[in-house]
Length: 387
Image 1 (cartoon, helix red, strand yellow):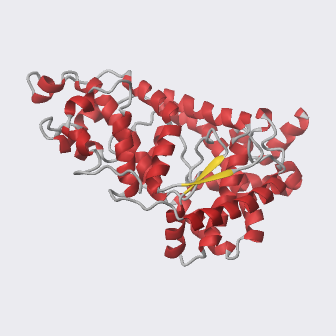
Image 2 (cartoon, helix red, strand yellow; image 1 turned 120 degrees about the horizontal axis):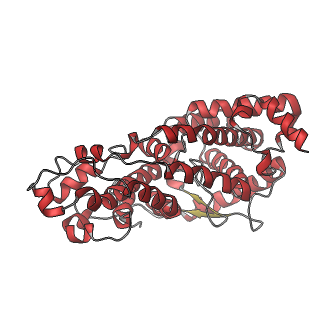
Image 3 (cartoon, one colour; image 1 turned 60 degrees about the vertical axis):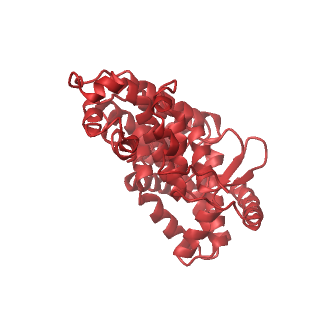
């Protein structure tokens, strides 16, 4: 059974021990983040471990997907030569993903932590007496709560490794959430094996692209620049915490439990500027992965049209975790990004066929610029000149 915190809510016993809550070192309280991620992902319930038969069946489908994607892309789909599978519960997906985002979330927290408060707490207030300089004291708890809640909401929907275009894991072992796959298949009256195969194909294509060193470096560069540009709006923090009662631990839960409560609206002009090339990169990624998934999936997935439509619709119907992740890390994979990616890929195919498209991920120099995503003929002309 998965490790779900018990006892009165997501923060459980942590909130009963304020000294422990505020004594964590560093810009993020990772214990708060972990507890909230698990609680939100599992909705406060214990989860059964993945069924062995589901693991065996998904492993079989992953091997088939791996072979066909390698043939369709002409790229290695893994670093070591083969892919592994790690079936997990929703809570386990949350803790694994939280760990994989630790560096970028720490960078984000450091950017936010450098801000000065916009106004001081009223002299003599209980907040001032008990917590002193509230914004600096509360920031690690706040960001931990936001990070944990965000990842927990992502985990509640995740079916595989790449439900969003997050950085590739350090290993070639892909996460799978069998319970989420089976639930989605039942909800849409689809074959579980059809959904498993689609998710396998989608994840293998993403892994093939995102493990290429120059692509991984580009994604990291975009995320790093975006998170470094954050500027904390301490007035929003103070407004949000106006009703917080230090004598009532669960008031922290009420104030900090919403993934969009504070950090969701902090995007600034510099970040909006940085999003232009970032969104172009995400468009190219979405267009390419959808094209390869469609090409191979039509051969391997029985009710492909139904499965594809259901899962693509689900992708753009964002949950709160996706919305906040997009705003915090810049990974805003909305319909406009997806549509632009499809138009780019179709434009390349019309002009140069699949041979031309195969050059997309060849090197850092062949990655398209924002104007080239809008005009694929420009991209083809440039890489032809470069060659």
